[in-house]
Length: 201
Image (cartoon, rainbow, N blue to C red; front, side):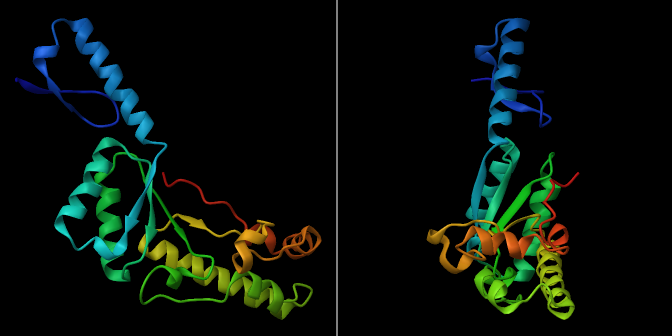
């Protein structure tokens, strides 16, 4: 088997069995197929187990996914220093910026050892009166703290179900009633709190 690398889109090259390439047309078809695979990987977000990133074989598997063009990872567990370094390595290796997601509605400490844990979203909703300026300021400070810790280690897609009206989520959501949810998040501070994540450029 003769292996050569052919340029094919997101990454510089793609290992190719040249015994299957008999003409420029074959090469172009292969390039298009490779490019399509990489585009498909872009819509996939894989689990990233932060407790395993010290394992060489596990690290290599994540790098392989990045090389294939994966869209990003959803983070579970791990320690701040290790995760910050590893996420930085993943981003540096990826040609397209990765989405790094995590369930952090109770703060980044919900997933990452050594970072701050906060009460549940329902506790926030019960404990703050957004008609009071001091409560609003405290809530914004809490959200900024969560956002700051997330950004510090590389989480750019925080998963925080503040507007889900769903009893299945229990305390993960702010409220179970539509009227209560509208009252909570129609406040002037809501545009800051609910500012959408955007993919890094």
